[in-house]
Length: 112
Image (cartoon, rainbow, N blue to C red; front, side):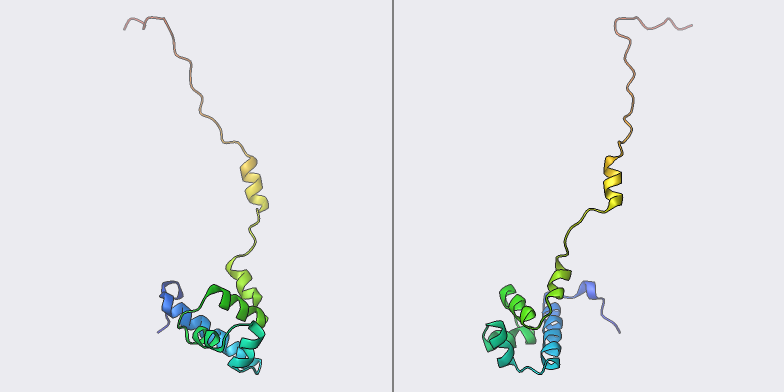
């Protein structure tokens, strides 16, 4: 049974991110001490991150930079751009509803 990823708890996200970091670290033939040195964080910080046991944003960023995975960070906050379609739509004026001028001072016509 597959877990719907949009309904993960914070703890599940921490564990999933930690597991990904661990896989990349091992794929680069690094131990936790080596990664900690490259990222300029403590070994305990790397261990906590990989085990999904709480980590600071600073540690996550430092570790991802050391692993050469800054594209993960970029995918979290992609640059905001305006699409040509949005520009076109913003330039189009919405038609205003016309309001008829009232008949001021004129008596209503007699019913017939």
